[in-house]
Image (cartoon, rainbow, N blue to C red; front, side, top):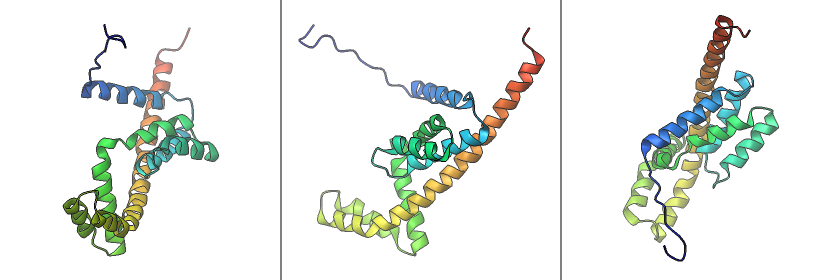
Length: 174
């Protein structure tokens, strides 16, 4: 035993993460609120989970959900949509959408970033040139994902609540 005690190893498995995501999903379904408020909260969370908020997505989603009177717990769960594993895909798709909408070449910016590395003057110039494309594209992508999240969550919650009511009528409490 060293000066700091024993070191415990933590096992990282994909199945463990999947189980945690499923548990969060179950918690989302059992929230006692209307399907509309749960889905709206989730959609707000998805938006701030994908939109670049510099780590403030959770707080912003809770604040906006509270302002609109929708479910804040669902908003917090929705921010999990922005997992770091998807960041390269989100950046690429955001740049492509922004470049397409503005009629500019995102591929040129992406190739400059890839070619010159991250610590050069060329990188800073490419970042300046491409940031407006990325921001516009990311806003559109965040809105599209939020709308899809609303529709998906609303359908899941409505289905869950219907099955719960049917189950209660089949087996009434005594």
